[in-house]
Length: 78
Figure (cartoon, rainbow, N blue to C red):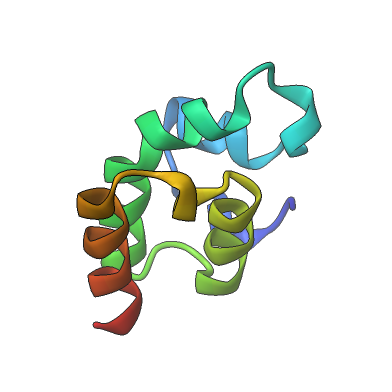
């Protein structure tokens, strides 16, 4: 997970990106909280899209509310 794809991310997002999902007690909950910041960095093209996608899959993003899923799908297809 280490690499150029995450080096421009400040604070918590950078820390989360360098740990495996099993490191966290509630990885899906943590990624839910970090989703807005993650999406902003993704849209600004400061993150590796494949890495972000794999972490959202690990965070079970499809189990979120219909509104959240629709918003994330809009980002993926933009």
